[in-house]
Length: 228
Image (cartoon, rainbow, N blue to C red; front, top):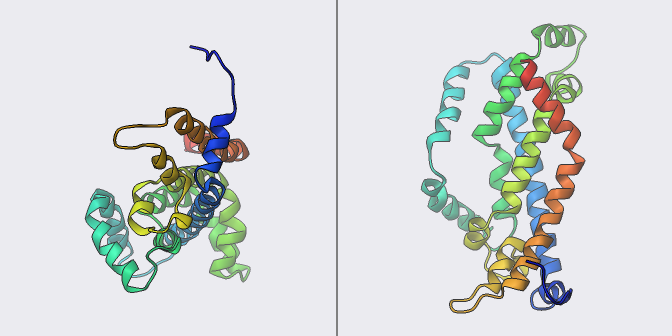
């Protein structure tokens, strides 16, 4: 099981045979901005549906939950048509901007936690003169750190490991992500397995670091959900 000759040449080949540093930066840029936008958009929608009173609130939430049943392949062509119409094809924004509207799962997930916060906190803040945005970001946001950390991990992993999205929207090699870069080592007849495995290990580093950073928040989020 152990190699007879130990060498780091495979890691060097990953960076010399392709612009891996550029691809790592592209992947981080897309994953960080897409995750941050998803959290913000989903938090705003979840808070509005859970706490604000407006006509059609129940119907809107039902529609959001219903979209969980729609496969992503159905919306793939319409979304690509929209991105091409506004000139975002072959740019990272084609993968970032659609996430800023939030996702149905994140809205549903956060709404359950927002409903668990007593209404007395919201009413007391409003009586003290707090605006709705201030109530959200100064009172509810600290209480939702655990669920937001869980969604951040899931969103970052989904965006970082995404292969189909970059293959559809990105055409230039300098715009590609690291997940797409690994496919360069796979040919129709020959696959460079040493370089492929070395590149896979390099791609694991950012996700491992992010998990270690948010480890405490994830445990707190699981504890809160267990208490509920």
